[in-house]
Image (tube, rainbow, N blue to C red; front, side, top):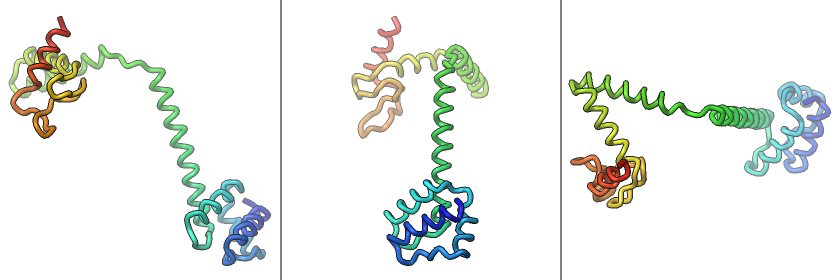
Length: 171
């Protein structure tokens, strides 16, 4: 903002708050120096927003903080849009993901002293029953079965009804 814009801003703010400093040359120079990178329309919006929520006299720091928040929000929206566009362009390689999971499962099985093929078969069975909903506890696909009180099962991986549904869906 330049000195003319600061004078207009202080004049508008003084209509709401009589404690706003009068735009003498020293005040204009100081405020213009502090608000030099803030656009005038953003400064006006900052003053309006300040007096909507705050009864204290607006200070240059309030306007600068509002400008920082505006820039941060714009940058976050731009970054989010770029991430979404990038994610839409890339389809996940499900085979590579599944291969990676199989390698991790095998490595964990070896460190635990379990046969890697048995561990992979167990993981495949878990994926199969997690792909179907449970008719007993009403767990959605991907969610674990729950017992009384909504706590996860401890003695078996899933309810018998879910295991049976998974078995029939894979045939």
